[in-house]
Amino acid sequence: GIHGQVYTVRLGGFDTHSNQANDYPRLMRALGGSIKAFYDDLASVNTSVNSQTVKAQDRVMVVGWSEFGRRIKENNGGTDHGTAILAFALGNMVKGGFYGQGYPNLTSPAANGNMVLTTDFRSLYATILERFLGYSDSKGILGATYSTLGFL
Image 1 (tube, one colour):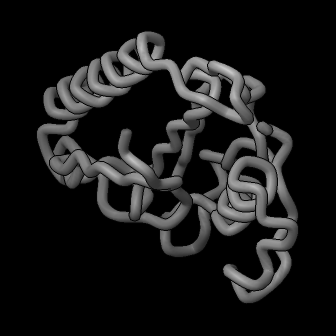
Image 2: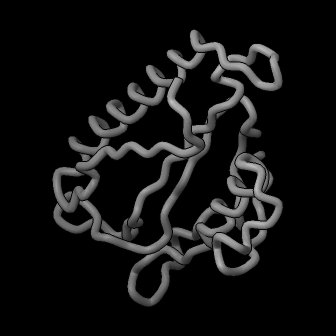
């Protein structure tokens, strides 16, 4: 009964400059367990689209991303802030796989030690806006035209 198209939740604690070997697996278990519980709950929720009953799992997409990336080189049992981030999407309408310009090359970082960005994050947003939320042209929201990715 909650009306809205976009909701956000946050999970902090990923700023692991040290003790990353212990903290990161714990954070991933919390993230994965939370997403699984939410997605499993969606299976029991029926919604209505054009007078047709549809499972909520068929209408919901979960997208996760970080506001900062990490450097490749370890420092004191962790890694420092970097540029290139990752993002993921899950849902019944999501086509599995890796999308974008390719995996970052871990053997050839930028001069400052950061991974080289391969895909503009606004391509992710353009894809969601146009192919999931139904905007015919994301330029009005993003301020420019960005290529879409093939995961939807």
